[in-house]
Amino acid sequence: MQPQVADAETPLRYKKTFFPFGNNLNMTYGTLDNLIVLKSQQKRLFGLDIGDRRIGVSVCDATWLIASPLTMLDRKTDWKAQLHKLLKQYPVGGFVSGLPLLMNGDEGPQAKKVKEFIETHIFPFNTPVYLWDERLSTCAANRALIEADMSRMKRKDNVDKVAASFILQGVLDRLRIMPNT
Image (cartoon, rainbow, N blue to C red; front, side, top):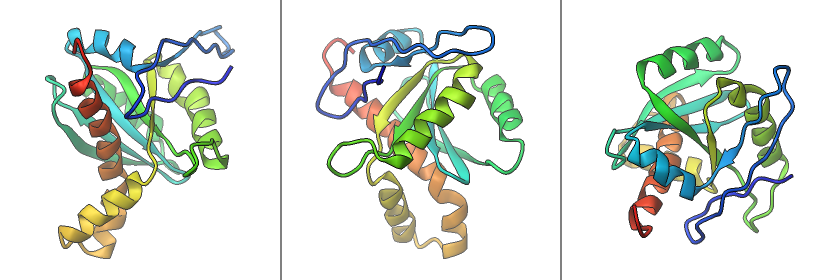
């Protein structure tokens, strides 16, 4: 069953996706409608920009107005322990993960890798995951860092967490213009 992906034009309806795990967890990809409920509970969100080598992490404020870059997790290290530590530090109600769609809107090989990673490594955190179209978010983050006159080395260390904040900010902005939010 394919999860639906939220984009800036279309609010989605809830669609449940089941994945088998050892303890028979039934996790779901959430939708914008589900996020509205979460917002009323005043829980923060983490934004994720999942790459092959690094995971950019951002967090929103309690009022869901601003997404801020938080950290970058190196997938070659014990990133799960670092993410557990962040989850204890910031009580979040869900993850917003970028889904790198192709320019025509189809899922390419990288989108499939990201979904597989989420289903294998993020769902076991037992926190809902919301997918957001992240086309060109890393390009936009790079552009912003270049405009801030950041050196190439510093950009490499910051681009993933800035891209994660762009992804999360896109969701927050979309929710702000939706009715009943």
